Image (cartoon, rainbow, N blue to C red; front, top):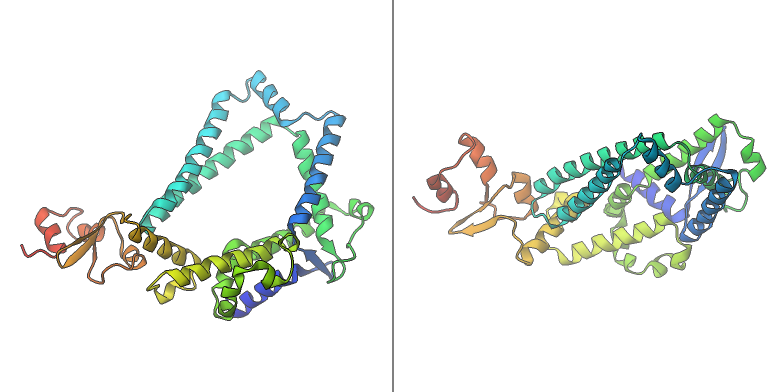
Length: 328
């Protein structure tokens, strides 16, 4: 991405809204704040109660029904619970791993488990049919969409009233939904992290320590994107302040920077994850060349995994001792 993209991204977050074109006219899409989230949650509860009054069953009642009919079994629910437990525990384990390559491998396992979990949940939802919660999500989702759309930059005039919005065609609502989703994707955590690490933002990093001072607004009035800018800015400022010898090509890469910082902390606390210092050389068990760079290891350090590949997948004791710097 070019520098102009990130400058525009931060400006968009500061503005508190995004501008788009809908039916050849400008539309301004408000970024949600904590106060807005509370307001929108009330709509969900309102529509859930309406659905129950109309006779739609809730999740608990529909779950009992599909179990009784035998089209869903308790073992399926246990599998969902097991996958959630395993995936969440693996996410915690990743934080304690020392080598970036190990983190990456385990993250793939986590992603696979979450994919399987979502597939199971989707199957259950399809078997259960529409619930009161589904109805509430759909109706409150429409209200959220309407609530975010404005005619003006000052965000004082909604694009549609409730009655007008109710008269929109399905394709119009779908197009508006895509506009909002595109903005959410553009202002993702990763993009904001990349933006605050760009050179133009470096002078602002230290100011992110004080959210109120930065924006001159109470935290409750800040949008979620404004909060994330200062949150990530503060996090990376602290990494730069307290982490030494950061490789230059890591300084604008959020994931590499966080992995490097964590690896350095692990070294300082004694969690060396397979790093051994012997004689005049060092070896890192299971490490790749990229891991060694991330660990800021001795320039003469070697990856035993990669050395083993050169010798048919195995190293004998004499070879290992030579790699460790011993004269044998």
